[in-house]
Amino acid sequence: MNNDETRAVFDRRMRRGLRPDTPTARVEHTGGVVRQTGSPDDWNGIVWSDLDERGADAAIAEQVRHYGALGLEFEWKHYSHDTPADLPARLAAAGFVPEPPETLLVAEVAEQPTEVRLPPGVRLVPVTDEAGVDLVARVHALAFEQDSARFRNRLLTQLSEDPEHLVVLLALAGDEPVCAARMELHAGTGFASLWGGGTAPAWRGKGVYRALVAHRAGIAAERGYRYLQVDASDQSRPILERLGFAALSTTTPYLRAVTG
Image 1: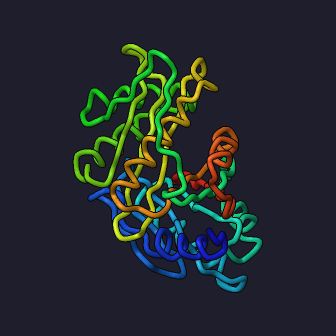
Image 2: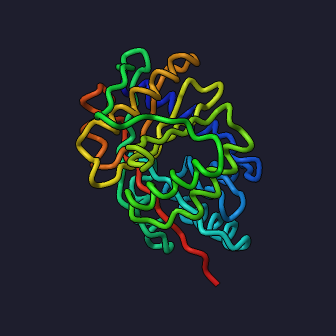
């Protein structure tokens, strides 16, 4: 895989070619950015920008006005290869707060192992209903130490409205959820994106996350997708790189709170 070429394909298909991820959201190409706007439970924010030093501040201010008028918190998803080079400083000056950076990792589906090896007593089950989503939200809150209410609502909407392009999995030890993960299949792009993989602290380092990656890679292969994409934390990056994922960029969420 040529990393520069693959990053260009990712930018073109997954960022500039963004499609709404729920029925209540819309995507707009405006003022040098590609943005999604939806309900408070949707992901709202900028996924692509093509800005220069002269127009960057005005473009940032316009997005602040847009989401502010709707009373929405939003995210500017910045990638380290975006321009201008000082865009992070400009976002910070406009009141955005950076979250921890993640690494954009991509792998060829055909090169991924698909054999699922789980610890004794652990099984994988698909999530298709509200009861399953509640278990996923419980693991999410435990693994990431975050409130999971908005995440739960968004996941329910996605499962209800577009189950064909979403795979949600739980790893259970007996009846106790120990890990949860999902995969979004982006039709027409060649990319399947892996999300979650949050593992309860007592079950980390036992191969559960790796098994969930393998299971999802198998599904992506069956459905004809070429690439797997992950925004990886420092915890998951070493595992994925050992599996052959290549680092293409660094991505940092810049959050802008609702202001009165």
